[in-house]
Length: 428
Ligand code: NDP
Image (cartoon, rainbow, N blue to C red; front, side, top):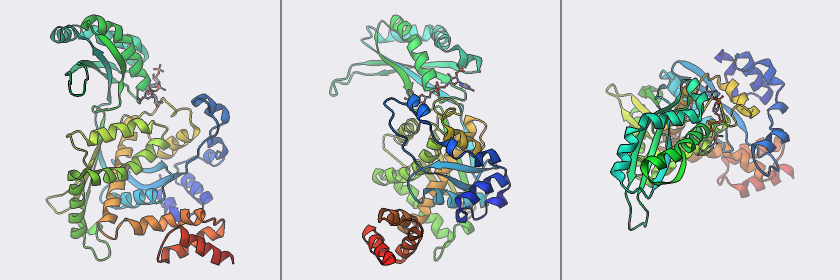
């Protein structure tokens, strides 16, 4: 990647941006001809979902300045909210000056569940399952042999007993977890096939009745961590010293650790970035969101996903850990033309590399949001970029969008009513 071509990317026209990505050796010149080809055809969309009518579009933009494990990335983000891509890029820029993100990606093990009830003897059922562990794993693998040929498959088994809860009137459940390496796939279909393939055998071994067999989206064995360490001189802003911003940012993280009302908003900011790249990559963002929010509650209280602390030398250290069972194949990744475009733009080679970038985007987003919150507040930057949406909502088109949004930035009340007044003045 030749980053020099990406300088002042946000000031370029759409054509100049695409040309710059080709000149920087990120996209190929074929991508310039593809704009129409990136849209979902009616035929493809009709085969993706049921009762298809139209395609609902979202803008896809590029976040810049991401240096992750020593490699530069331009990150595709599909999102309707203004300011998210700008915030990710500006956070990543400071972090790149500090050496970039370092990531740790765990093994990619997903969990499948078979939930059984009406077990006559729980301890006998448990010992039967343990004694037949090899056979159970073998049967699971036989249900989806191609993943075994790829080096993955069912690796382990664990058992959980959820006791009867008289107050909630729930029966006792015995839940069998199968731990499965799904390689480059997120694995929902692989896992579901395997779980259904062993259900009857588990009923025989336990004497119970299966209630359901499906993957768990709580992917606690597929974790990605990003860290960054930022010297205080890179944090200084206006009247705030770097030390002051570092300390306030650490306190902001602490507040989101102890207060669930704040934690939800703190994590929503992280998910602004995560959802946008997960969606752009063609992965199932509902699956990721569900798992991430459950992970935020793993202590029994919903807490901040990220944490910020002071290093011994006074630097600011941030880290973020998330369950990220994304795939580089499967689902709509290989068939959605925009997901394929995202793959070329990001240039990732494996699901682990995609995880590394996604978790870094979340940390960059969190850093930018907290930095704004503990200094000038969120509205200044956010509403500056929101001005364009307000101008369009007020009815502005063409050059009037720029004129109204520029004047809105200096207006006492930046809202729709003001935008309408400004538009009338411009048009009269
Ligand atoms: P797919 O079934 O679409 O694709 C996985 C397949 O890709 C594998 O079975 C494998 O088939 C093939 N493949 C090719 N190369 C590789 C490789 N290197 N590593 C692994 N597999 C490879 O997708 P998933 O099983 O990942 O399931 C994801 C989809 O399931 C998403 O669309 C999601 O929305 C949906 N879903 C999600 C649920 C949830 O989250 N709760 C529930 C149900 C569905 P082969 O080996 O035979 O070539």
